[in-house]
Image (tube, rainbow, N blue to C red):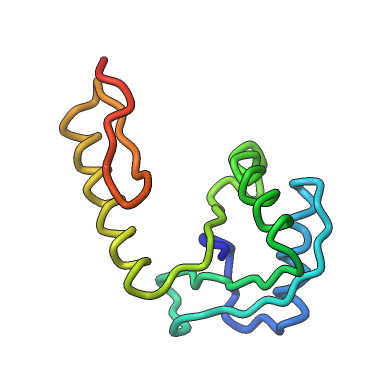
Length: 124
């Protein structure tokens, strides 16, 4: 899944596929993909994109390289994740909100979400 990819709301499947291919080419990968936006079309939220890849190896390669997107101007706010159920996405969203709050309350500590739990990475 791809989160944070810009959305005009009126993109055709071909235009969306081209945008996803451009993102993957920034990671120096050219997988064959099929793509689909999920969720309700809204001007205030970016909809996630479900990407079907040919092999699990390509999925793992892309997930490993996903951090490189932070260093690109166009895709710095985009991130990749494995496909999650709606309940898993809601739980993950809740955990990330909690981590954001913990970081705000404890700026000298580093927190992260890993394996469905909040972990303290370092403490000052």
